[in-house]
Structure formats: structure tokens, C-alpha cells
Image (spheres, helix red, strand yellow):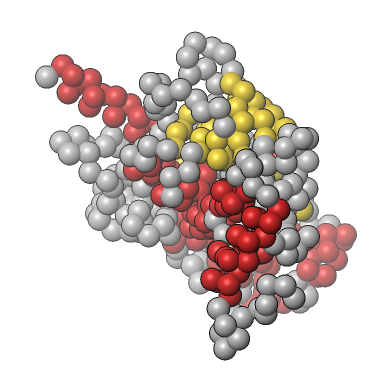
Length: 445
């Protein structure tokens, strides 16, 4: 019984923290096909995709997650409700599966890691990637320096053919008392993630004046009793900026009865916690009844049930920027037509951190899988074009399957004539005949 009890306790501990449990019995590889930096939904999706095609991949997770403060996740099919993976006789602790609706981010990561751990070519560790340097002599090779102590306190220096940056964003919260303390629990920034649980309640908007019209447009199908707390930003300059961004905004707000309160906020105090436990756990969405008081430097306080906030965000990690990845609007610039590759060949950016300007869990999952598929392989035609010298110079990166294919064709002692013969044979196989819709002409053209 003692081994079973120990296993049960270990599983519960993993659930409570949502951390990675490294497989200590396996040595690190000399070189990985890819190293993924970040263990949120995007990084886990990329790892899963590459595990499915048996790529040797290491995921390094610093344990920093943008959605960690939230009560639970929503709009993630299969997890939008209290339907969690079974632990047999074990029941997950309350921390991991919220009794109202949705699963906590920690539980989601736990479930994903547990599933991925069954694939033998991938590994997950806790640690912080401190630096990544491209090899000047070998374009398809990167050195990764990791601050981690899997075996007694020393860091790691690893190499990889490809890098996937899933480092995420960090919300930059104001110092106003009560905002950071209640972030993700009645004060939220994503209508799709948390808005439905506060529908038809008294809503407050937090942010500068120029963000108010857009926030109102997002929330009107959920809330109509709206007060915008703009915290002294309703100045002539910002009113002009707001007009430029949203022409006719004042009339728009009047039509919908939105009140703009320009007083300076001194603090937000929680009056009621909406994260209670008396609700049907099978439902995907159940109302949460939070209550807050907003205090000002002057005048009477105002009470609201919830807040939609518009605060800035920044890169959680500087490792991408420091290795030379371009930023676009504060995001890692990624080419959406080429698997989300960055300006550095072989380096990809996925999830909230990249420049496609979409930030939610389904998007993170999609971007991770998208890059995994792109990074893994090419069509036979791509391989033919690469070996025959016909690949466009503008191709931003060389993917793993193409590299593998070139090595297979070339070998250690291949002659130029043999290489041309192999390329010609592949061309004829893939290209088909003149009647085929994708026919590209003769090999010698």
C-alpha cells in the first residue's frame, strides 16, 4: 500500500502546482531537433505536435503564465466545464478543478503534460532559458543556456536545430491598490474568457479614454449598465486622440448610456467574492457574483460587479529580443505565411508573444500546432526544389524534413552527378505529366 499511497500523493502535489515533473532517469541529448521555450498552452501544443511525429524535443518551462491568476479557463472545447481527466480512484483537489465552471490553468497544464509524457521522444523540465546564440558556422544550430537544477544545482548548455519561442506576455498592471490583488477574479481583460460569467451585471471599464469605445463595442452583447473609469485621462489631447480612433465616440457612448467617470482612483476594494462553490459543476458557464467598491480622491465611491480592463502588456522574457528577433508593436515578429518563423531562420514565435495580435488559449494551441507541422516537414516537391537549387532565395527558413532529406540524398561521398540524378528522379515522380494541374515543366528547363 505504501508505494500506491506515495504515487497518489505525488499526483496530487503535481495537480496542485501544475509544475513539470522531470524524468530524471534520462540523460539530456547532445542535440535536439527543437527546444521549446515556455510551457503554457502554445508551448505544450507545439510539443505535442512534434511528439506525434517522434521528433526529439525539449520543453523548458519557467513557470510564468499570463493566465495563472484567473479562476478558470473558458472557450476551450472539452475543458469548458468540469469534465477533467480521470485520476482513477483519486479526485483532483479543489484548487485544480473549479466547482463553478471551467478548469483552472494549472489543471489544464497538468492534463496536457500527463498526456504528452507518454511520448518517449520529448522531455519537459523546469528552468529558465537565459540566452540563445545561433552558431555562426552552422546556420541550423543553436546553443541554449538554461538555468535549471535537475541534478544538483548546475545549469545546462544544450544545442538544438530549431527554436520555438512560446514565452508569452505579461500584463503591466497599475499600482492602484486592489487591481493586482483581484486580477483575474472579477477584474479581467478578455470578454471571451471571463465576460459571460458576469453578463447582465453592473460593469466597470478600467483604462484610458481612447480605449473606452472599443471596450464598449466588445461588451454590449453582455452588459448594458457600463461606467468607464478613465482615471483622469479625459483631457483635451486624449479626447482628440479618441475621436481620431473612434469618430463619433461621444454620441456612441450617449446612445448606449455609458457614463464616463474621470475622477482619480485611489483604490478598488472587494466587497464580495464571486468564486463560491454552490453551483452545478457540469455546466460550462455559471454566473459569478463579485462586488467591488471604487474609491476616488474626491466624491462618493461607486460600486460595480466586475471590470473589463485595458492595460498594456510586455514580453515575459527578453531572450527572443536579445538573440536578435525583431519586435513589431512589442511582439515577436512572426511570418504568418511561413509557420510563424521570425527574422532569424530556424527560430519561431508562437502564442501571445508573437505579432499576430491574437491572445487566447485556442489561438495559442493553434499557433503551437501550426509551427510544429511547419517545422517538421515539407512536401516531396519542396525537397526536389531544394536539391535542384530551385528554392526561392526568399524562403525564410529550412525545416527539419528538408534538412534530413538533403542529408539522406547527399550522404558522405555523393558526387554531383549522383545528386542531380536523385533530384531528377524525384522531380519526375512528383511532377507528373503535362496534363497534371501542378505540372511545372521539364527538369532541365
